[in-house]
Length: 403
Ligand SMILES: Cc1cc2nc3c(=O)[nH]c(=O)nc-3n(C[C@H](O)[C@H](O)[C@H](O)COP(=O)(O)OP(=O)(O)OC[C@H]3O[C@@H](n4cnc5c(N)ncnc54)[C@H](O)[C@@H]3O)c2cc1C
Image 1 (cartoon, helix red, strand yellow):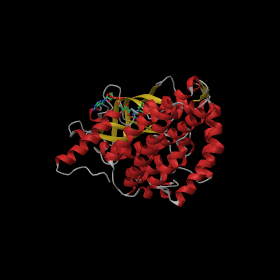
Image 2 (tube, protein in one colour; image 1 turned 120 degrees about the horizontal axis):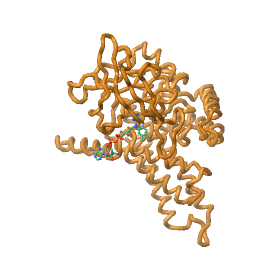
Image 3 (cartoon, helix red, strand yellow; image 1 turned 120 degrees about the vertical axis):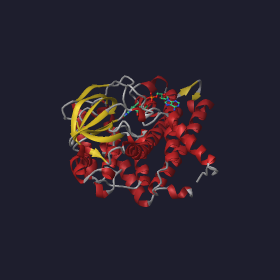
Image 4 (cartoon, protein in one colour; image 1 turned 90 degrees about the vertical axis):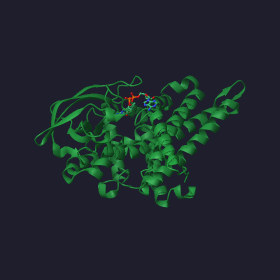
């Protein structure tokens, strides 16, 4: 496929310009106020969301029939490059993780009743949600080992288990909980996804776990959650019973790409800050921009960012064509997570001590970048997936083709 096919259409370009103008006018100037994560910041988020909605820039990950403003992965990739430049962009445009992924699986697998009760408030922005899969006692990289149990009692599930890193659970209206519903089934049919309203008796948010020194608030928390005798109707099962893994795959594939699209924005912002500061700051009789080490960082970052962009757009295009793009998604997940970390780290280094302060967004970006190499599957697991699939193809006598 020609690279030109991946360029934004005129319509996508127009939309991207509008998103960029919105970010310039309303998000960047408010970033420091939003970073305070206090009552005033919450009120500001509400105002900015109302404005984004009024301007028709709302929920760009969903098609219009689901209440969104886009629907094509490729268009969303181009928009997310802008939205992702600030941590707050995704929340302002109502395409934040984990709600975006939850919204997508509710849209694809939810019953009419589930859509009405749970998807509609997500899309309208009245409610937030969380995705509760990872457990402290077993490796999140291998979710076939999950221990949280849902036992059927008449028309109800009774859920018992212990989760952590349920992002955004503080203040959320409901969670989608991955629980073992048939322990005797084969490894990939043991679990189901069950929608659990957060106010169901037995749901306990134990704490928001501080990560890299940050506790977070509401949407930015990563919570430890206990489920003790939590009773919800079997009708809250998302999709078929035992299909939890298939749905998780459906959720995590696009979810990973959504993350990477935003990282492209983060990388480009860090890159711009690095280049500007390199030209401005002088040491040993000349600007940093004249030092070869700094030039190498700039050149390497330029190459890595563009490689990540093209890999991401290619995967988005393939998903739009109905391909699951499992190899492409895993390649970009580990490759871009590393590139994000390295580009931001170089930008911090060029800024010296200033890079660690709140005078630039870089320190916050670096803390978030570290997590990128772990969440939604650590680098090592994605490399394993890529290698296994490619080798399987060779073993079957079909060389892997780069298309
Ligand atoms: C910021 C953040 C947000 C998150 N949000 C959510 C959320 O909303 N909902 C949710 O359910 N979970 C969430 N998670 C959890 C995340 O998905 C898990 O941390 C991840 O799947 C890894 O699981 P683990 O932490 O148990 O590490 P483990 O599975 O115990 O792995 C530990 C390490 O072992 C190595 N490793 C694992 N497998 C292999 C292998 N095959 N080969 C070589 N090395 C390997 C890797 O280096 C890995 O980092 C979040 C995590 C973070 C950091």
